[in-house]
Image (cartoon, rainbow, N blue to C red; front, side, top):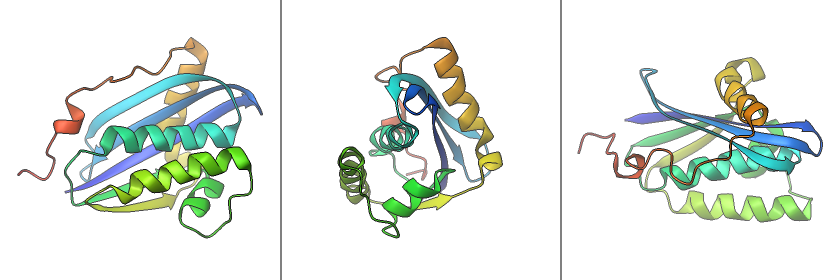
Length: 152
């Protein structure tokens, strides 16, 4: 089974109050998982990477054939895919951690850039987290890592 994940990081100001939004759907479009959280004062790029890292950490033990990650951050997607260099020292730390987590996945993982309007659901979650200042829970869906979406 293919999973489609959507991540977004939002920052009001750069840096400013920031949040993340994550959605995971099965190929048919049914939502399997959502998460959002306030991450404090951050830059937009750090928020985007935090959303991706949170997704990867939550899904690392999920069984699937393919994981397609969608983000409206063209910079982050191109950096992760090796098309752009990472110049900022702080972002390099996030980037290294993303690559480390990606190397541990047993399924194929693809990261795609999508237009902002196709990422509205994740964007809404990130902005709601900022509005409410709701911190990301450590494990909002504890059964997810054990979930076997391949039907095995």
